[in-house]
Image (tube, rainbow, N blue to C red; front, side):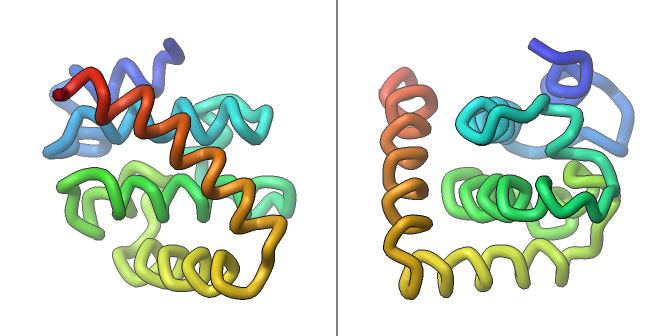
Amino acid sequence: MSTALAEIRSAPSSRYRVSDPFVADVIAAVAAEFGLSEREMMVHSRDHRLWKPRMAAMYYTRLLTSCSLPELGRVFGGRSHTTVLRAFRRCREMIDTDEMWATRMDRLLVKLVEKIVAPRL
């Protein structure tokens, strides 16, 4: 587990404190799917190769966890809650219009459900 994900799970730092510990699991699964490090998913960077994976991570953290938009914004590089909301909506639009993206997101959802939801049952 990366240091950044350990911070999300246990650090008293308000920068990474979130109400749902499964945010770290979502970030790790999405990073693995796209071949990135967890740190890359959370830095404040406009690197072109990071925007789709980060958007997917924001989408699934919003969908599968109980975290607020401001909490998620802090996790993903200190972004605003509106950035997280826009990423969520944009990802949803891409799922509806881009078959390849929808297939990848479906595959990722299966992995997330197996990793996160099944152990909770």
